[in-house]
Length: 413
Image (tube, rainbow, N blue to C red; front, side):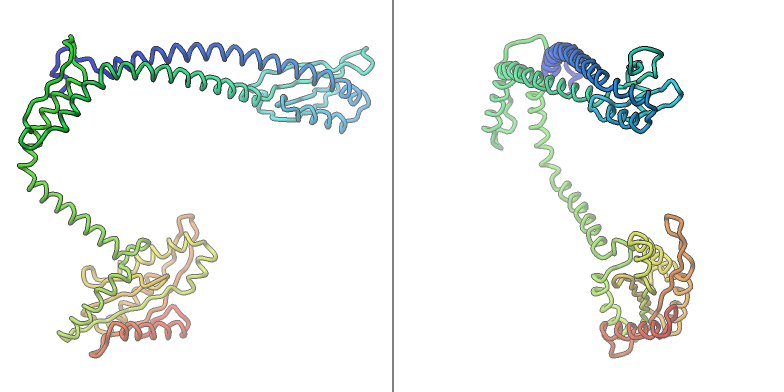
């Protein structure tokens, strides 16, 4: 049953929230208004007092500096004024056309500008220029911070009052019915699962969440019975989901996270089986060792992120040259890859290695647009009758070493 099935339904949470919102809003508006007035007055008074002090103490020195035509002294005086914490920007416009400024010029577009005339040193004659001062907005922010702290304390008090109100309402409207329901649930047994729940509540013209919970309790009792009947089906579904999850975990455990190739874990499991099958049925099997030439230089010059991108691209190029469903590739370690080719003679494996060498030698473009040339060396070995995984890989590694001794970017086998 849903809330729409009740004609005159009024959520208890809505009643509580409305009362809380009214009280909180009234207190917030009152506190904000009082604090806003106090903050505004405080900032204005301190700002005007600071400006008066600054103007009174600095205008005479500015006047002397302009009169004596000492630009450096005037500049230092302007910078000293701008260094005051109350000042954000200062500009002096001299009547001769010179201009000196210091501070944050961007404040001119947003701040309130105060103008002061600079009289001559002797107090008589034409004004030497005018001084423009913009207040430092940080002062306003500090004042606002104090206001916010005050409001926070006010809200703390408000919260205490609201909590007291909520506790009173919850105890009367919610706690006692819920306690009755909890007692009923704690005494339930399998034999009494269908026993109805009765709450001693005063009659009312509307229904709230307590009534819905009581009704839902009966629905839950019925659903539990149906759930038990379908438990076997749910267990089967969970088993299938678990099998899928285990399969996904298995796939993650046998693949290299960077290149997507198989890793050493799978190699140690699968290659011995491939060798045993080939020897038992007298089938051929070849392996190709691939090692990227001078890969350390790539990392040193372009960075390890670029090196990772190179390995991903090379792995894709190697995979594109292999037989799908037959050949498989393993990231053996670092910049080394191992290609396993069942049903492949030595000569065919050599041809495959040559294709791989050519595919890798194609220029590669990094995500940042840089182009680089990478080569690789290859060692090929074919399974012998008495080979093990260690001896087979050892011979392929020896051939790889020969390829590197021969100057790299070549194949030996």
